[in-house]
Length: 134
Image (cartoon, rainbow, N blue to C red):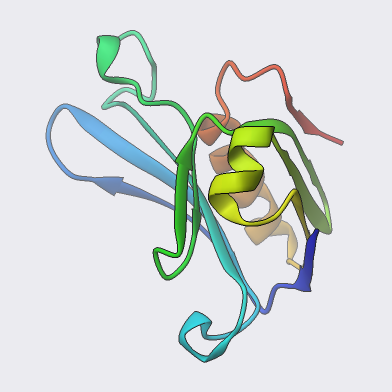
């Protein structure tokens, strides 16, 4: 299990082309190049924020331990987002690829940051039954 307090929490959208957008949430304790924890969860959707417009190009949810120490797709068993934490339990495959069975991240956000994180996370985990906002 990996457990840390995030000093930086980000949620953003990258528009790489007219056809798709990458939704991303990330949690960073400190500089990963100096031993700090940094994780992100990403999903590519069609430009209208749906899977339908993306077609079969959906690779699913991508979990990344920065700085590119581990990357795995569709390797999550459960993920729960609350007002002050995010927890993720990896599948057996995900545990092997990410080097940990789970992560637990604590954070503190203002209302605007929380709403942005929650709405972006709902797109990252779109149609994933294992994801819950509690």
